Length: 466
Image (cartoon, rainbow, N blue to C red; front, side, top):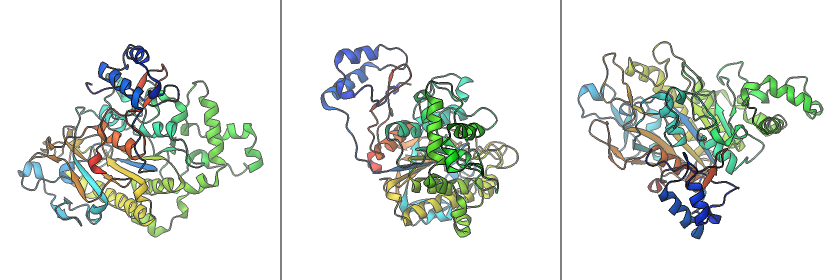
Protein backbone atom coordinates (compact mmCIF):
# COMPACT_ATOMS: atom_id res chain seq x y z
CA UNK A 1 0.00 0.00 0.00
CA UNK A 2 3.10 2.18 -0.09
CA UNK A 3 2.10 3.80 -3.38
CA UNK A 4 -1.41 4.65 -2.24
CA UNK A 5 -2.29 8.31 -2.60
CA UNK A 6 -6.05 8.52 -2.37
CA UNK A 7 -7.19 11.52 -4.37
CA UNK A 8 -9.45 12.59 -7.26
CA UNK A 9 -10.62 15.65 -9.42
CA UNK A 10 -13.64 17.52 -8.16
CA UNK A 11 -15.66 20.59 -8.84
CA UNK A 12 -15.49 21.28 -5.10
CA UNK A 13 -11.71 21.45 -4.82
CA UNK A 14 -9.62 22.85 -7.64
CA UNK A 15 -5.96 21.75 -7.24
CA UNK A 16 -4.90 25.20 -8.45
CA UNK A 17 -6.70 26.74 -5.49
CA UNK A 18 -4.99 24.60 -2.83
CA UNK A 19 -2.73 26.58 -0.52
CA UNK A 20 -0.36 25.24 2.12
CA UNK A 21 -2.89 25.49 4.95
CA UNK A 22 -5.57 23.66 2.93
CA UNK A 23 -3.11 20.94 1.96
CA UNK A 24 -2.08 20.38 5.57
CA UNK A 25 -5.74 20.24 6.65
CA UNK A 26 -6.51 17.67 3.95
CA UNK A 27 -3.47 15.62 4.86
CA UNK A 28 -4.67 15.27 8.42
CA UNK A 29 -8.04 13.81 7.52
CA UNK A 30 -6.97 10.31 8.51
CA UNK A 31 -7.15 7.04 6.63
CA UNK A 32 -7.41 7.78 2.95
CA UNK A 33 -5.87 11.23 3.44
CA UNK A 34 -2.72 12.48 1.72
CA UNK A 35 0.84 11.63 2.67
CA UNK A 36 3.59 14.25 3.00
CA UNK A 37 4.94 13.70 -0.53
CA UNK A 38 1.46 14.28 -1.87
CA UNK A 39 1.06 17.45 0.15
CA UNK A 40 4.19 18.75 -1.55
CA UNK A 41 2.83 17.68 -4.92
CA UNK A 42 -0.41 19.55 -4.25
CA UNK A 43 1.57 22.65 -3.35
CA UNK A 44 3.36 22.41 -6.70
CA UNK A 45 -0.03 22.06 -8.38
CA UNK A 46 -1.17 25.20 -6.60
CA UNK A 47 1.53 27.07 -8.50
CA UNK A 48 1.39 25.34 -11.87
CA UNK A 49 -2.01 23.62 -12.06
CA UNK A 50 -2.51 19.98 -13.14
CA UNK A 51 -0.91 18.80 -16.37
CA UNK A 52 -3.91 18.03 -18.56
CA UNK A 53 -3.02 15.51 -21.30
CA UNK A 54 -4.42 15.76 -24.79
CA UNK A 55 -7.37 13.41 -25.26
CA UNK A 56 -6.52 10.61 -27.67
CA UNK A 57 -9.60 8.45 -27.02
CA UNK A 58 -13.30 9.23 -26.83
CA UNK A 59 -14.37 5.82 -25.53
CA UNK A 60 -12.94 2.76 -23.78
CA UNK A 61 -13.86 -0.93 -24.03
CA UNK A 62 -12.57 -3.20 -21.24
CA UNK A 63 -12.71 -6.93 -21.96
CA UNK A 64 -12.27 -8.65 -18.59
CA UNK A 65 -11.36 -12.35 -18.87
CA UNK A 66 -12.61 -13.32 -15.44
CA UNK A 67 -10.74 -16.15 -13.76
CA UNK A 68 -7.21 -15.29 -14.84
CA UNK A 69 -5.97 -16.02 -18.40
CA UNK A 70 -2.66 -17.81 -18.75
CA UNK A 71 0.01 -15.67 -20.39
CA UNK A 72 2.10 -18.82 -20.93
CA UNK A 73 -0.50 -20.21 -23.35
CA UNK A 74 -1.70 -16.99 -24.97
CA UNK A 75 0.63 -13.99 -25.18
CA UNK A 76 3.98 -14.98 -23.69
CA UNK A 77 4.81 -18.54 -24.66
CA UNK A 78 8.10 -20.07 -23.50
CA UNK A 79 8.94 -22.74 -26.11
CA UNK A 80 12.45 -23.25 -24.72
CA UNK A 81 11.28 -23.84 -21.15
CA UNK A 82 10.87 -27.33 -19.65
CA UNK A 83 7.70 -29.21 -20.65
CA UNK A 84 6.09 -28.76 -17.22
CA UNK A 85 6.15 -25.03 -17.92
CA UNK A 86 5.70 -24.64 -21.67
CA UNK A 87 2.87 -27.18 -22.08
CA UNK A 88 1.90 -28.36 -25.55
CA UNK A 89 0.75 -25.10 -27.18
CA UNK A 90 3.19 -23.74 -29.74
CA UNK A 91 3.83 -20.13 -30.73
CA UNK A 92 2.99 -18.92 -34.22
CA UNK A 93 4.25 -15.90 -36.11
CA UNK A 94 2.08 -12.82 -36.32
CA UNK A 95 1.92 -10.19 -39.02
CA UNK A 96 4.60 -8.27 -37.09
CA UNK A 97 8.11 -9.62 -37.38
CA UNK A 98 9.44 -10.95 -34.08
CA UNK A 99 6.10 -11.15 -32.26
CA UNK A 100 4.63 -14.61 -31.64
CA UNK A 101 1.45 -15.65 -29.83
CA UNK A 102 -0.47 -18.90 -29.27
CA UNK A 103 -1.33 -21.13 -32.21
CA UNK A 104 -4.92 -21.17 -30.93
CA UNK A 105 -5.38 -17.45 -31.61
CA UNK A 106 -4.81 -17.35 -35.39
CA UNK A 107 -7.05 -14.38 -36.11
CA UNK A 108 -5.35 -12.25 -33.51
CA UNK A 109 -2.01 -13.26 -35.00
CA UNK A 110 -3.07 -11.59 -38.25
CA UNK A 111 -3.87 -8.35 -36.37
CA UNK A 112 -0.75 -7.92 -34.23
CA UNK A 113 0.02 -4.62 -35.94
CA UNK A 114 -3.13 -3.20 -34.30
CA UNK A 115 -2.34 -3.94 -30.64
CA UNK A 116 0.43 -3.95 -28.03
CA UNK A 117 1.12 -6.80 -25.61
CA UNK A 118 2.25 -5.68 -22.15
CA UNK A 119 4.10 -8.72 -20.78
CA UNK A 120 5.25 -7.40 -17.41
CA UNK A 121 2.09 -6.60 -15.41
CA UNK A 122 2.23 -7.65 -11.76
CA UNK A 123 0.70 -7.19 -8.33
CA UNK A 124 0.60 -9.11 -5.03
CA UNK A 125 -2.99 -10.36 -4.67
CA UNK A 126 -3.73 -14.01 -5.52
CA UNK A 127 -7.41 -14.09 -4.51
CA UNK A 128 -9.99 -13.44 -7.24
CA UNK A 129 -12.09 -10.65 -5.63
CA UNK A 130 -9.19 -8.56 -4.33
CA UNK A 131 -7.13 -9.10 -7.48
CA UNK A 132 -10.01 -8.12 -9.76
CA UNK A 133 -10.58 -4.99 -7.65
CA UNK A 134 -6.90 -4.06 -7.97
CA UNK A 135 -6.91 -4.49 -11.73
CA UNK A 136 -10.15 -2.56 -12.24
CA UNK A 137 -9.58 0.43 -9.96
CA UNK A 138 -5.79 0.48 -9.82
CA UNK A 139 -5.37 0.14 -6.04
CA UNK A 140 -5.36 -2.71 -3.53
CA UNK A 141 -8.60 -2.98 -1.63
CA UNK A 142 -8.50 -1.50 1.87
CA UNK A 143 -11.09 -3.85 3.39
CA UNK A 144 -9.84 -7.21 4.74
CA UNK A 145 -11.26 -10.54 3.57
CA UNK A 146 -13.99 -11.74 3.51
CA UNK A 147 -15.46 -8.23 3.26
CA UNK A 148 -13.31 -7.59 0.20
CA UNK A 149 -15.46 -9.96 -1.83
CA UNK A 150 -18.48 -7.67 -2.28
CA UNK A 151 -19.14 -4.14 -3.50
CA UNK A 152 -19.23 -1.28 -1.02
CA UNK A 153 -19.78 2.49 -1.09
CA UNK A 154 -16.44 3.00 0.68
CA UNK A 155 -14.51 1.56 -2.28
CA UNK A 156 -12.72 3.37 -5.03
CA UNK A 157 -14.84 3.87 -8.15
CA UNK A 158 -14.53 1.89 -11.36
CA UNK A 159 -12.94 4.06 -14.10
CA UNK A 160 -16.27 3.98 -15.95
CA UNK A 161 -17.88 5.78 -13.02
CA UNK A 162 -15.06 8.31 -12.86
CA UNK A 163 -15.46 8.98 -16.57
CA UNK A 164 -19.23 9.28 -16.13
CA UNK A 165 -18.74 11.89 -13.42
CA UNK A 166 -15.97 13.91 -15.05
CA UNK A 167 -16.83 13.63 -18.75
CA UNK A 168 -20.55 12.87 -18.61
CA UNK A 169 -22.61 11.56 -21.51
CA UNK A 170 -21.66 12.22 -25.11
CA UNK A 171 -25.17 11.52 -26.35
CA UNK A 172 -28.47 10.25 -24.91
CA UNK A 173 -26.94 6.92 -23.98
CA UNK A 174 -25.50 5.84 -20.62
CA UNK A 175 -21.90 7.01 -20.16
CA UNK A 176 -20.93 3.69 -18.49
CA UNK A 177 -22.33 0.27 -19.44
CA UNK A 178 -21.47 -3.14 -17.96
CA UNK A 179 -22.49 -6.33 -19.73
CA UNK A 180 -23.66 -9.00 -19.85
CA UNK A 181 -23.60 -9.03 -16.03
CA UNK A 182 -21.35 -8.23 -13.09
CA UNK A 183 -18.76 -10.76 -11.94
CA UNK A 184 -20.32 -12.81 -9.18
CA UNK A 185 -19.17 -16.43 -9.49
CA UNK A 186 -20.00 -18.49 -6.42
CA UNK A 187 -20.88 -15.49 -4.28
CA UNK A 188 -21.81 -11.79 -4.15
CA UNK A 189 -21.00 -9.35 -6.92
CA UNK A 190 -17.35 -8.51 -6.61
CA UNK A 191 -15.95 -5.18 -5.47
CA UNK A 192 -14.73 -2.62 -7.98
CA UNK A 193 -17.57 -2.92 -10.47
CA UNK A 194 -19.57 0.19 -9.57
CA UNK A 195 -19.14 3.82 -8.52
CA UNK A 196 -18.03 3.11 -4.96
CA UNK A 197 -17.77 6.32 -2.96
CA UNK A 198 -18.93 8.43 -5.92
CA UNK A 199 -22.47 7.19 -5.27
CA UNK A 200 -25.17 5.35 -7.17
CA UNK A 201 -25.70 8.15 -9.70
CA UNK A 202 -22.52 7.04 -11.47
CA UNK A 203 -23.07 3.28 -11.34
CA UNK A 204 -23.01 1.44 -14.68
CA UNK A 205 -26.10 0.77 -16.74
CA UNK A 206 -26.35 -3.01 -16.43
CA UNK A 207 -28.21 -5.29 -18.78
CA UNK A 208 -28.01 -8.55 -16.79
CA UNK A 209 -29.08 -10.51 -19.84
CA UNK A 210 -27.34 -12.79 -22.35
CA UNK A 211 -27.31 -11.09 -25.78
CA UNK A 212 -26.82 -14.49 -27.40
CA UNK A 213 -30.22 -15.73 -26.24
CA UNK A 214 -33.55 -15.13 -28.06
CA UNK A 215 -35.06 -13.70 -24.86
CA UNK A 216 -32.29 -11.09 -24.49
CA UNK A 217 -33.56 -7.84 -23.04
CA UNK A 218 -31.70 -4.54 -22.70
CA UNK A 219 -33.38 -3.83 -19.37
CA UNK A 220 -35.30 -0.61 -18.90
CA UNK A 221 -34.98 0.12 -22.62
CA UNK A 222 -37.42 -2.70 -23.32
CA UNK A 223 -40.58 -0.64 -23.05
CA UNK A 224 -43.91 -2.32 -22.38
CA UNK A 225 -45.94 -2.46 -25.59
CA UNK A 226 -48.71 -0.33 -24.05
CA UNK A 227 -46.35 2.50 -23.05
CA UNK A 228 -46.81 5.24 -25.65
CA UNK A 229 -44.69 8.37 -25.84
CA UNK A 230 -47.50 10.38 -24.21
CA UNK A 231 -47.73 7.92 -21.35
CA UNK A 232 -43.95 8.02 -21.02
CA UNK A 233 -44.26 11.67 -20.03
CA UNK A 234 -46.26 10.56 -17.01
CA UNK A 235 -43.84 10.22 -14.10
CA UNK A 236 -45.91 7.40 -12.64
CA UNK A 237 -45.55 5.38 -15.83
CA UNK A 238 -41.82 6.00 -15.82
CA UNK A 239 -41.61 4.90 -12.19
CA UNK A 240 -43.35 1.64 -13.10
CA UNK A 241 -40.82 1.00 -15.86
CA UNK A 242 -37.87 1.64 -13.56
CA UNK A 243 -39.26 -0.45 -10.73
CA UNK A 244 -40.02 -3.31 -13.11
CA UNK A 245 -36.34 -3.28 -14.08
CA UNK A 246 -34.94 -2.67 -10.62
CA UNK A 247 -31.88 -4.85 -11.19
CA UNK A 248 -30.64 -2.44 -13.83
CA UNK A 249 -30.23 0.32 -11.28
CA UNK A 250 -28.72 0.42 -7.84
CA UNK A 251 -31.35 0.03 -5.11
CA UNK A 252 -29.73 2.81 -3.12
CA UNK A 253 -31.43 5.02 -0.58
CA UNK A 254 -28.81 7.76 -0.90
CA UNK A 255 -30.24 11.25 -1.19
CA UNK A 256 -30.84 12.21 -4.79
CA UNK A 257 -29.95 8.85 -6.28
CA UNK A 258 -33.51 7.69 -6.90
CA UNK A 259 -34.44 10.88 -8.73
CA UNK A 260 -31.22 10.68 -10.73
CA UNK A 261 -32.17 7.16 -11.76
CA UNK A 262 -35.58 8.26 -12.95
CA UNK A 263 -33.91 11.01 -14.96
CA UNK A 264 -31.49 8.51 -16.50
CA UNK A 265 -34.30 6.12 -17.21
CA UNK A 266 -36.26 8.81 -19.01
CA UNK A 267 -33.25 9.70 -21.15
CA UNK A 268 -32.86 6.06 -22.10
CA UNK A 269 -36.42 5.10 -22.88
CA UNK A 270 -37.06 8.33 -24.77
CA UNK A 271 -33.88 8.08 -26.85
CA UNK A 272 -34.15 6.34 -30.24
CA UNK A 273 -30.34 6.28 -30.35
CA UNK A 274 -30.12 4.29 -27.11
CA UNK A 275 -32.83 1.88 -28.17
CA UNK A 276 -31.14 1.28 -31.52
CA UNK A 277 -27.71 0.81 -29.95
CA UNK A 278 -28.93 -2.09 -27.82
CA UNK A 279 -30.74 -3.80 -30.72
CA UNK A 280 -28.53 -6.61 -32.03
CA UNK A 281 -31.22 -7.60 -34.54
CA UNK A 282 -29.91 -4.78 -36.72
CA UNK A 283 -26.65 -6.69 -37.22
CA UNK A 284 -26.38 -9.08 -40.21
CA UNK A 285 -26.08 -12.77 -39.35
CA UNK A 286 -22.63 -12.83 -40.94
CA UNK A 287 -21.40 -10.19 -38.49
CA UNK A 288 -22.90 -11.94 -35.48
CA UNK A 289 -21.36 -15.21 -36.62
CA UNK A 290 -17.96 -13.57 -36.99
CA UNK A 291 -17.98 -12.38 -33.37
CA UNK A 292 -19.16 -15.80 -32.24
CA UNK A 293 -22.58 -17.06 -31.21
CA UNK A 294 -21.77 -17.15 -27.52
CA UNK A 295 -22.35 -14.78 -24.64
CA UNK A 296 -18.87 -13.23 -24.83
CA UNK A 297 -18.90 -12.74 -28.60
CA UNK A 298 -22.33 -11.13 -28.68
CA UNK A 299 -21.49 -8.97 -25.65
CA UNK A 300 -18.38 -7.68 -27.43
CA UNK A 301 -20.45 -6.95 -30.54
CA UNK A 302 -22.88 -5.04 -28.35
CA UNK A 303 -19.92 -3.13 -26.88
CA UNK A 304 -18.96 -1.98 -30.37
CA UNK A 305 -22.49 -0.73 -30.94
CA UNK A 306 -22.32 1.07 -27.58
CA UNK A 307 -19.24 3.12 -28.46
CA UNK A 308 -20.66 3.86 -31.90
CA UNK A 309 -23.68 5.36 -30.13
CA UNK A 310 -21.47 7.44 -27.83
CA UNK A 311 -21.03 5.39 -24.63
CA UNK A 312 -17.87 6.53 -22.84
CA UNK A 313 -16.83 3.22 -21.28
CA UNK A 314 -18.11 -0.31 -21.82
CA UNK A 315 -16.97 -3.11 -19.51
CA UNK A 316 -17.54 -6.65 -20.82
CA UNK A 317 -17.12 -9.50 -18.35
CA UNK A 318 -16.29 -13.05 -19.33
CA UNK A 319 -19.20 -14.79 -17.63
CA UNK A 320 -18.29 -17.67 -15.33
CA UNK A 321 -20.81 -20.34 -14.43
CA UNK A 322 -18.95 -23.12 -12.68
CA UNK A 323 -19.58 -26.73 -13.58
CA UNK A 324 -17.63 -28.80 -16.07
CA UNK A 325 -14.43 -28.16 -17.99
CA UNK A 326 -14.22 -24.50 -18.90
CA UNK A 327 -17.32 -23.66 -16.88
CA UNK A 328 -15.19 -21.71 -14.43
CA UNK A 329 -14.07 -19.47 -17.25
CA UNK A 330 -10.36 -18.73 -17.25
CA UNK A 331 -9.96 -20.11 -13.72
CA UNK A 332 -8.49 -23.37 -15.04
CA UNK A 333 -7.20 -25.27 -12.01
CA UNK A 334 -7.70 -28.55 -13.87
CA UNK A 335 -7.51 -29.72 -17.47
CA UNK A 336 -6.16 -26.30 -18.35
CA UNK A 337 -4.99 -26.95 -21.90
CA UNK A 338 -8.15 -28.80 -22.89
CA UNK A 339 -10.37 -25.98 -21.63
CA UNK A 340 -8.18 -23.31 -23.22
CA UNK A 341 -8.04 -24.99 -26.61
CA UNK A 342 -11.71 -25.91 -26.88
CA UNK A 343 -13.70 -23.43 -24.81
CA UNK A 344 -11.67 -20.34 -24.01
CA UNK A 345 -9.24 -19.25 -26.71
CA UNK A 346 -11.49 -19.70 -29.80
CA UNK A 347 -14.28 -17.38 -28.59
CA UNK A 348 -11.73 -14.89 -27.25
CA UNK A 349 -9.87 -14.92 -30.57
CA UNK A 350 -13.08 -14.40 -32.56
CA UNK A 351 -14.55 -11.64 -30.39
CA UNK A 352 -11.40 -9.56 -29.91
CA UNK A 353 -10.37 -9.82 -33.57
CA UNK A 354 -13.82 -8.92 -34.85
CA UNK A 355 -13.97 -5.92 -32.53
CA UNK A 356 -10.60 -4.56 -33.63
CA UNK A 357 -11.35 -5.25 -37.30
CA UNK A 358 -14.70 -3.45 -37.14
CA UNK A 359 -13.39 -0.48 -35.18
CA UNK A 360 -10.52 -0.11 -37.63
CA UNK A 361 -12.75 -0.44 -40.72
CA UNK A 362 -15.24 2.10 -39.34
CA UNK A 363 -12.53 4.62 -38.47
CA UNK A 364 -13.15 4.25 -34.73
CA UNK A 365 -10.02 2.42 -33.56
CA UNK A 366 -7.94 5.57 -33.15
CA UNK A 367 -10.55 7.02 -30.80
CA UNK A 368 -11.50 3.83 -28.94
CA UNK A 369 -9.12 2.36 -26.35
CA UNK A 370 -9.53 -1.43 -26.05
CA UNK A 371 -8.01 -3.22 -23.04
CA UNK A 372 -8.16 -7.01 -22.63
CA UNK A 373 -7.08 -8.30 -19.24
CA UNK A 374 -7.87 -10.58 -16.32
CA UNK A 375 -7.28 -10.30 -12.59
CA UNK A 376 -3.94 -12.14 -12.80
CA UNK A 377 -2.10 -14.81 -14.80
CA UNK A 378 -1.53 -18.45 -14.03
CA UNK A 379 1.34 -20.43 -12.57
CA UNK A 380 4.38 -21.28 -14.68
CA UNK A 381 4.13 -24.93 -13.65
CA UNK A 382 1.12 -27.21 -14.10
CA UNK A 383 -0.41 -28.71 -10.96
CA UNK A 384 -1.25 -32.38 -10.34
CA UNK A 385 -4.65 -31.96 -12.07
CA UNK A 386 -3.12 -30.69 -15.32
CA UNK A 387 -4.21 -27.17 -14.38
CA UNK A 388 -2.51 -23.89 -13.74
CA UNK A 389 -3.19 -22.00 -10.52
CA UNK A 390 -3.38 -18.27 -9.66
CA UNK A 391 -0.26 -16.19 -10.41
CA UNK A 392 -0.27 -12.38 -9.89
CA UNK A 393 3.51 -11.95 -10.01
CA UNK A 394 3.71 -11.59 -13.81
CA UNK A 395 1.11 -11.70 -16.57
CA UNK A 396 0.07 -10.03 -19.82
CA UNK A 397 -2.46 -7.36 -20.83
CA UNK A 398 -3.37 -6.43 -24.41
CA UNK A 399 -4.11 -2.83 -25.45
CA UNK A 400 -5.27 -1.44 -28.78
CA UNK A 401 -6.48 1.83 -30.25
CA UNK A 402 -7.14 5.10 -28.47
CA UNK A 403 -3.60 6.37 -29.02
CA UNK A 404 -1.82 3.06 -28.27
CA UNK A 405 0.78 2.10 -30.88
CA UNK A 406 0.19 -1.28 -32.49
CA UNK A 407 2.68 -3.97 -33.40
CA UNK A 408 4.67 -3.81 -30.18
CA UNK A 409 5.57 -5.76 -27.06
CA UNK A 410 6.18 -3.76 -23.90
CA UNK A 411 8.11 -5.29 -21.02
CA UNK A 412 9.27 -8.86 -20.70
CA UNK A 413 9.00 -11.75 -18.28
CA UNK A 414 11.85 -13.99 -17.19
CA UNK A 415 12.74 -17.32 -18.83
CA UNK A 416 9.79 -19.16 -17.29
CA UNK A 417 7.28 -16.29 -17.23
CA UNK A 418 7.33 -16.06 -13.44
CA UNK A 419 8.40 -12.46 -12.82
CA UNK A 420 8.96 -9.29 -14.83
CA UNK A 421 12.44 -9.06 -16.32
CA UNK A 422 12.13 -5.56 -17.79
CA UNK A 423 9.75 -2.60 -17.48
CA UNK A 424 7.49 -3.88 -14.67
CA UNK A 425 3.94 -2.47 -14.86
CA UNK A 426 1.48 -2.09 -11.98
CA UNK A 427 -2.32 -1.98 -12.31
CA UNK A 428 -2.14 1.69 -11.29
CA UNK A 429 0.06 2.40 -14.33
CA UNK A 430 -2.50 0.81 -16.64
CA UNK A 431 -5.28 2.88 -15.08
CA UNK A 432 -3.19 6.05 -15.34
CA UNK A 433 -2.65 5.26 -19.02
CA UNK A 434 -6.41 4.81 -19.53
CA UNK A 435 -7.13 8.23 -18.00
CA UNK A 436 -4.27 9.83 -19.92
CA UNK A 437 -5.68 8.55 -23.22
CA UNK A 438 -9.06 10.09 -22.32
CA UNK A 439 -7.43 13.45 -21.62
CA UNK A 440 -7.77 13.21 -17.84
CA UNK A 441 -4.77 13.94 -15.63
CA UNK A 442 -4.18 10.83 -13.47
CA UNK A 443 -3.19 13.02 -10.53
CA UNK A 444 -6.36 15.09 -10.70
CA UNK A 445 -8.55 14.96 -7.61
CA UNK A 446 -11.95 13.51 -6.81
CA UNK A 447 -13.53 13.18 -3.38
CA UNK A 448 -15.39 10.58 -1.41
CA UNK A 449 -18.59 11.15 0.56
CA UNK A 450 -16.52 12.52 3.47
CA UNK A 451 -14.84 14.99 1.10
CA UNK A 452 -11.49 13.22 1.37
CA UNK A 453 -9.31 13.71 -1.74
CA UNK A 454 -8.12 10.86 -3.96
CA UNK A 455 -6.09 10.92 -7.15
CA UNK A 456 -7.72 9.33 -10.17
CA UNK A 457 -4.82 6.89 -10.39
CA UNK A 458 -1.79 6.23 -8.25
CA UNK A 459 0.44 5.18 -11.11
CA UNK A 460 2.22 6.77 -14.04
CA UNK A 461 0.97 6.70 -17.64
CA UNK A 462 3.05 4.40 -19.84
CA UNK A 463 3.81 7.09 -22.41
CA UNK A 464 6.10 4.79 -24.39
CA UNK A 465 2.97 2.94 -25.49
CA UNK A 466 1.57 6.07 -27.13
